[in-house]
Length: 156
Image (cartoon, rainbow, N blue to C red; front, side):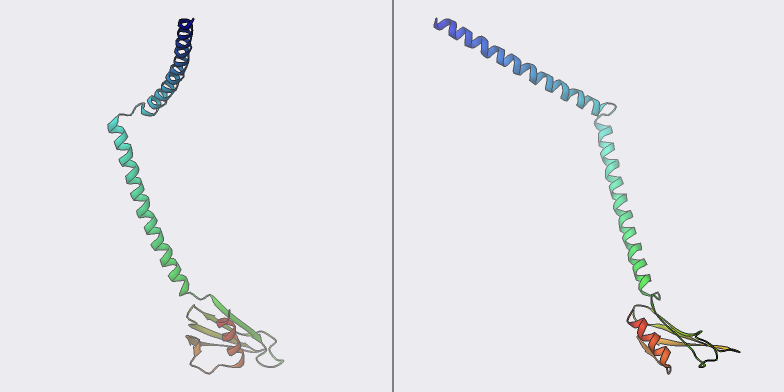
């Protein structure tokens, strides 16, 4: 009776190993198919060439990115030297004679350097004056409206 038990156990273990072997063989076959599909048309030299080409493309992208960063920095530097602070005050220069068409316009950059344009409009004539502003200071005497336009521009 013991012999039958041993033989039965051996048969059961053999069947278990056979099933496991079949499953493993299927996995290996699937893996081999995927590998062959990946390597189709490629040998070790082609694969090395493909990797080298990818590394060269990465280097080119890195150089292009660095150049782009430099251009962005230059553009930002250029923006700080443009006029983007503005102050404008409209007024009646000749009291009831020219309407409210006169104005003082102040344009400044980041360092509060720029100019004030004052245009006085009358019925028969119009006058324009420009005054330089350096670091928030005008070296010519400013009228009330020009001072107000300068303050608006500095605080904008």
